[in-house]
Amino acid sequence: MTPEAIKQMIESHLPDARVEVYGDDGTHFQALVVAEAFEGKPVLSRHRMVYDALGARMGGEVHALSLKTQTPSEFQNVG
Image (cartoon, rainbow, N blue to C red; front, side):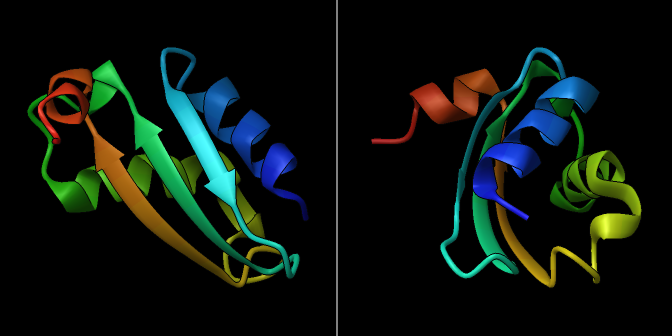
């Protein structure tokens, strides 16, 4: 599994998302996902939305995924 493949899966599931994925060992990854779809949702729900994009690959091809999920306004206000 590559960071680019994970990025594409998340973007296809959350088309409005800005996605950055990092990881160089093929099984452990970190991702920043910024999406309007996260508005009003708690962190756990946001993470589930991303995990849904990866489906059965979670726990298999993707052994670990560290997530940071934000709405566009949350992302702009980080500083």
